[in-house]
Amino acid sequence: MSTQPKTFLTPEEYLEIERKAEFKSEYYAGEMFAMSGGTDTHALLGFHLLGLLYRELRGSSCRAYTSDMRICLKENGPYYYPDASVVCGESKFADSRRDSLLNPVVIFEVLSPSTATYDLGDKFIQYRRLDSLREYVVVHQDTRLVQRFERREEGQWLLTFYSGLEGVVTLSSVPCVLPMAEIYEGIQ
Picture 1 (cartoon, helix red, strand yellow):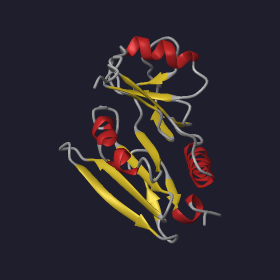
Picture 2: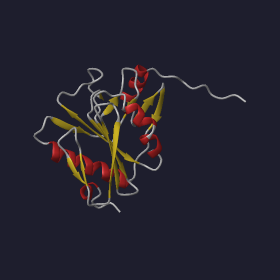
Picture 3: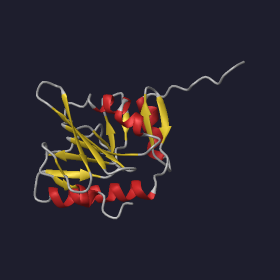
Picture 4: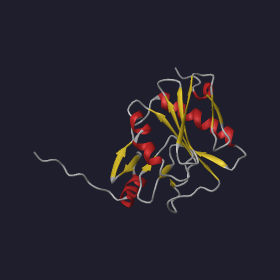
């Protein structure tokens, strides 16, 4: 029985394909992975996060990016599209195209049932390679639960859970207070 050999892509080949593509794909270990469309709940949670980030970051040196901003972890990848990211100070990019961000301080992922294990496991392991990253915030769409991972001085990550609608997610690396009731507003 024969199998099709996998085609290994260099980061440069990935970027050339990705920049012409009609849909987004992430890149890891020489392979491209097409991103599927999200549910209405996923889209609303992402929208709420970005609205709150805009409100909270106004007037500061920090700004939020949508899921259209690709994150480059190292010069050879991986490349990911988080649901939102925040940079403080000058944004740094992998090249002059300014479409692959190098220095997010906070990354947000809205968990889908199909991506939860990956987002909390291997993807988070890769994100931790970013020297700039101080917080990783994971928003669950099937329950009112937010997990905030904070990098400590010793390189350890502290996990804080927020559940229900009464809590407030307070970020330590950027001037943001995100009420759970507003993150999940209108979400069944």
